[in-house]
Image 1: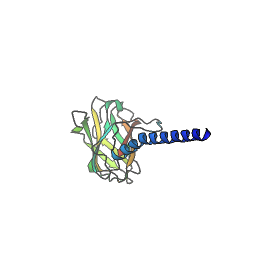
Image 2: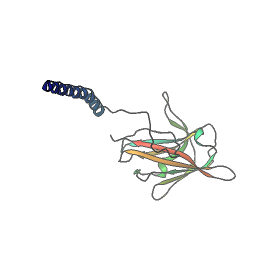
Image 3: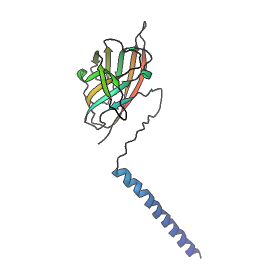
Image 4: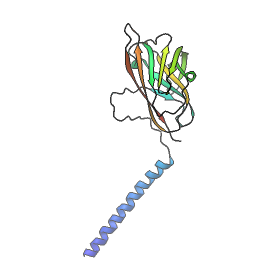
Length: 191
C-alpha cells in the first residue's frame, strides 16, 4: 500500500509542477517580447522632495531631445527673481547656454502639444563643472496663473536611468529669499 501511495504523491507533485510551468512560462515570454510603457512614476525614500512636472520629446539614450521643466502656478508661491537648477553629476550631456531657454508655455495633453508661447528674455549662467544652472529673467516671473518652463535642447546621455534635477527659486520682494521649488525626475530608456 505504501508504494502505491508514494507513486500517487509523486504523480501529483509532477502534475502541479507541470501546471505551474504552463502558467508561468507565458508571463516570462510576454515580458521579454513586449515593452510596456507605464504612466506611473515611483520615487523611493520620499524625504521632502516635491515632484515637479516635466515633458521630454524622446526618452531614448543618445537621441536629440527637447526637455520642458515646468514651473506651474502651484509650484511657485511668489514671483521669481532667479531660478537655480542643480544638474545631476552623472548627466553626461553637453549643456550650452544657447540651447537653454525660459518661456511661457502651454502644457499639452490629449488633444494639444506642449509648446512655448512667449520667450522670456533672461541671462543664463552655467558653472564650469556643468552641475549648476542659474537663470536670471530680465523681469521677474510673476506669481500669476501662467505656466513657465525651462527648456533644454540637448542630446540624451549615453547611460539609461533616472536623473533628478533639483530646483531653487529666489523670491521677488523686499527681502529676496531662496527656497526649494521641487525636483524633476527625468527617465532615459535603454533602447
